[in-house]
Length: 193
Figure (tube, rainbow, N blue to C red):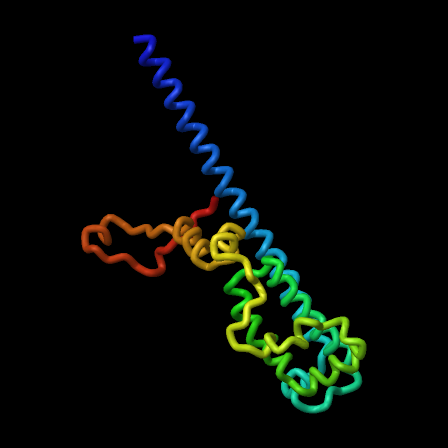
Protein backbone atom coordinates (compact mmCIF):
# COMPACT_ATOMS: atom_id res chain seq x y z
CA UNK A 1 0.00 0.00 0.00
CA UNK A 2 2.89 2.33 0.79
CA UNK A 3 4.40 1.70 -2.66
CA UNK A 4 1.10 2.72 -4.27
CA UNK A 5 1.15 6.09 -2.45
CA UNK A 6 4.78 6.67 -3.40
CA UNK A 7 3.95 5.84 -7.02
CA UNK A 8 0.90 8.14 -6.92
CA UNK A 9 3.03 10.93 -5.41
CA UNK A 10 5.58 10.55 -8.21
CA UNK A 11 2.83 10.61 -10.86
CA UNK A 12 1.27 13.73 -9.32
CA UNK A 13 4.70 15.36 -9.16
CA UNK A 14 5.41 14.59 -12.82
CA UNK A 15 1.99 15.87 -13.89
CA UNK A 16 2.52 19.04 -11.87
CA UNK A 17 5.92 19.54 -13.51
CA UNK A 18 4.44 19.00 -16.98
CA UNK A 19 1.63 21.45 -16.21
CA UNK A 20 4.09 24.03 -14.91
CA UNK A 21 6.31 23.67 -17.99
CA UNK A 22 3.31 24.01 -20.31
CA UNK A 23 2.12 27.12 -18.42
CA UNK A 24 5.59 28.64 -18.56
CA UNK A 25 5.90 27.93 -22.29
CA UNK A 26 2.45 29.35 -23.01
CA UNK A 27 3.13 32.46 -20.90
CA UNK A 28 6.48 33.02 -22.65
CA UNK A 29 4.75 32.81 -26.03
CA UNK A 30 2.06 35.28 -24.97
CA UNK A 31 4.73 37.63 -23.62
CA UNK A 32 6.56 37.57 -26.97
CA UNK A 33 3.30 38.24 -28.79
CA UNK A 34 2.53 41.15 -26.47
CA UNK A 35 5.99 42.60 -27.13
CA UNK A 36 5.25 42.48 -30.86
CA UNK A 37 1.89 44.21 -30.35
CA UNK A 38 3.42 46.88 -28.12
CA UNK A 39 6.07 47.69 -30.73
CA UNK A 40 3.45 47.81 -33.47
CA UNK A 41 1.48 50.27 -31.36
CA UNK A 42 4.53 52.53 -31.12
CA UNK A 43 4.78 52.59 -34.92
CA UNK A 44 1.06 53.30 -35.29
CA UNK A 45 1.35 56.19 -32.82
CA UNK A 46 4.31 57.56 -34.78
CA UNK A 47 2.27 57.32 -37.98
CA UNK A 48 -0.67 59.27 -36.56
CA UNK A 49 1.63 61.88 -35.05
CA UNK A 50 3.24 62.43 -38.47
CA UNK A 51 -0.11 62.41 -40.26
CA UNK A 52 -1.51 65.08 -37.94
CA UNK A 53 1.37 67.39 -38.90
CA UNK A 54 0.70 67.06 -42.64
CA UNK A 55 -1.66 69.39 -44.46
CA UNK A 56 -4.88 67.95 -45.85
CA UNK A 57 -3.61 68.59 -49.39
CA UNK A 58 -0.49 66.50 -48.88
CA UNK A 59 -2.46 63.71 -47.20
CA UNK A 60 -5.03 63.56 -49.98
CA UNK A 61 -2.74 63.88 -53.02
CA UNK A 62 0.82 62.66 -52.60
CA UNK A 63 1.45 62.85 -56.34
CA UNK A 64 1.68 66.63 -56.38
CA UNK A 65 4.63 68.72 -55.24
CA UNK A 66 5.10 68.64 -51.49
CA UNK A 67 4.19 71.80 -49.62
CA UNK A 68 7.37 73.24 -48.04
CA UNK A 69 5.58 73.28 -44.66
CA UNK A 70 5.07 69.51 -44.94
CA UNK A 71 8.63 68.57 -45.87
CA UNK A 72 9.62 67.64 -42.31
CA UNK A 73 6.53 65.50 -41.83
CA UNK A 74 7.06 63.75 -45.18
CA UNK A 75 10.72 63.11 -44.31
CA UNK A 76 9.57 61.65 -40.99
CA UNK A 77 7.08 59.46 -42.86
CA UNK A 78 9.81 58.12 -45.12
CA UNK A 79 11.94 57.37 -42.04
CA UNK A 80 8.95 55.62 -40.48
CA UNK A 81 8.53 53.44 -43.57
CA UNK A 82 12.22 52.53 -43.46
CA UNK A 83 12.03 51.75 -39.73
CA UNK A 84 8.95 49.55 -40.26
CA UNK A 85 10.74 47.56 -42.95
CA UNK A 86 13.76 47.17 -40.67
CA UNK A 87 11.57 46.03 -37.74
CA UNK A 88 9.82 43.49 -39.97
CA UNK A 89 13.17 42.21 -41.21
CA UNK A 90 14.23 41.62 -37.59
CA UNK A 91 11.03 39.69 -36.86
CA UNK A 92 9.43 42.33 -34.65
CA UNK A 93 6.26 42.94 -36.72
CA UNK A 94 3.47 40.37 -37.10
CA UNK A 95 2.36 38.94 -40.43
CA UNK A 96 -1.10 40.54 -40.13
CA UNK A 97 0.30 44.00 -39.44
CA UNK A 98 2.91 43.69 -42.19
CA UNK A 99 0.27 42.78 -44.75
CA UNK A 100 -1.57 46.04 -44.02
CA UNK A 101 1.58 48.20 -43.84
CA UNK A 102 3.20 46.71 -46.95
CA UNK A 103 0.70 48.28 -49.35
CA UNK A 104 1.33 51.77 -47.94
CA UNK A 105 5.10 51.25 -48.04
CA UNK A 106 4.89 50.03 -51.65
CA UNK A 107 2.86 53.14 -52.42
CA UNK A 108 5.54 55.36 -50.90
CA UNK A 109 8.35 53.49 -52.68
CA UNK A 110 6.51 53.80 -55.99
CA UNK A 111 5.64 57.48 -55.60
CA UNK A 112 7.95 59.63 -57.74
CA UNK A 113 7.42 62.76 -55.64
CA UNK A 114 8.27 60.97 -52.38
CA UNK A 115 11.24 59.18 -53.93
CA UNK A 116 12.47 62.51 -55.27
CA UNK A 117 12.37 63.89 -51.75
CA UNK A 118 14.14 60.78 -50.51
CA UNK A 119 16.96 61.40 -53.00
CA UNK A 120 17.22 65.00 -51.76
CA UNK A 121 17.42 63.84 -48.14
CA UNK A 122 20.01 61.17 -48.83
CA UNK A 123 22.33 62.20 -51.62
CA UNK A 124 25.05 59.79 -50.45
CA UNK A 125 22.62 56.85 -50.57
CA UNK A 126 23.49 55.57 -47.11
CA UNK A 127 20.01 55.91 -45.65
CA UNK A 128 16.68 54.49 -46.83
CA UNK A 129 18.32 51.38 -48.25
CA UNK A 130 15.11 49.36 -48.02
CA UNK A 131 12.94 52.00 -49.71
CA UNK A 132 15.54 52.40 -52.46
CA UNK A 133 15.65 48.68 -53.19
CA UNK A 134 13.61 47.37 -56.08
CA UNK A 135 12.06 44.80 -53.74
CA UNK A 136 10.11 47.49 -51.89
CA UNK A 137 7.93 47.91 -55.00
CA UNK A 138 7.27 44.19 -55.44
CA UNK A 139 3.84 42.97 -54.52
CA UNK A 140 4.12 40.31 -51.84
CA UNK A 141 7.66 41.27 -50.79
CA UNK A 142 8.34 40.44 -47.17
CA UNK A 143 11.66 41.43 -45.58
CA UNK A 144 11.14 38.88 -42.78
CA UNK A 145 13.08 35.79 -43.76
CA UNK A 146 12.46 33.83 -40.57
CA UNK A 147 11.25 30.29 -41.17
CA UNK A 148 7.60 29.57 -40.44
CA UNK A 149 8.48 27.72 -37.22
CA UNK A 150 10.37 30.74 -35.81
CA UNK A 151 7.65 33.18 -36.87
CA UNK A 152 5.10 31.00 -35.13
CA UNK A 153 7.27 30.77 -32.01
CA UNK A 154 7.69 34.56 -31.87
CA UNK A 155 3.97 35.20 -32.16
CA UNK A 156 4.19 36.74 -35.64
CA UNK A 157 1.85 34.37 -37.43
CA UNK A 158 -1.91 34.77 -37.35
CA UNK A 159 -2.51 31.03 -36.95
CA UNK A 160 -1.19 31.10 -33.40
CA UNK A 161 -2.99 34.30 -32.45
CA UNK A 162 -6.25 32.95 -33.88
CA UNK A 163 -5.73 29.77 -31.90
CA UNK A 164 -5.20 31.79 -28.71
CA UNK A 165 -8.30 33.84 -29.44
CA UNK A 166 -10.32 30.67 -29.88
CA UNK A 167 -9.01 29.43 -26.56
CA UNK A 168 -9.93 32.71 -24.89
CA UNK A 169 -13.41 32.81 -26.32
CA UNK A 170 -16.22 30.65 -25.22
CA UNK A 171 -19.78 30.46 -26.27
CA UNK A 172 -22.36 30.56 -23.53
CA UNK A 173 -25.93 29.65 -24.02
CA UNK A 174 -28.94 29.30 -21.83
CA UNK A 175 -30.58 25.96 -21.13
CA UNK A 176 -33.37 26.75 -23.56
CA UNK A 177 -30.91 27.49 -26.36
CA UNK A 178 -29.06 24.26 -25.65
CA UNK A 179 -32.33 22.36 -25.96
CA UNK A 180 -33.16 24.08 -29.24
CA UNK A 181 -29.59 23.96 -30.51
CA UNK A 182 -29.51 27.72 -31.17
CA UNK A 183 -26.60 29.87 -30.07
CA UNK A 184 -26.75 33.64 -30.44
CA UNK A 185 -23.74 35.42 -31.91
CA UNK A 186 -24.07 38.09 -29.23
CA UNK A 187 -23.32 35.56 -26.57
CA UNK A 188 -19.66 35.14 -27.40
CA UNK A 189 -17.87 36.17 -24.25
CA UNK A 190 -14.18 36.88 -23.88
CA UNK A 191 -12.66 35.01 -21.04
CA UNK A 192 -10.37 37.20 -19.02
CA UNK A 193 -7.30 35.46 -17.84
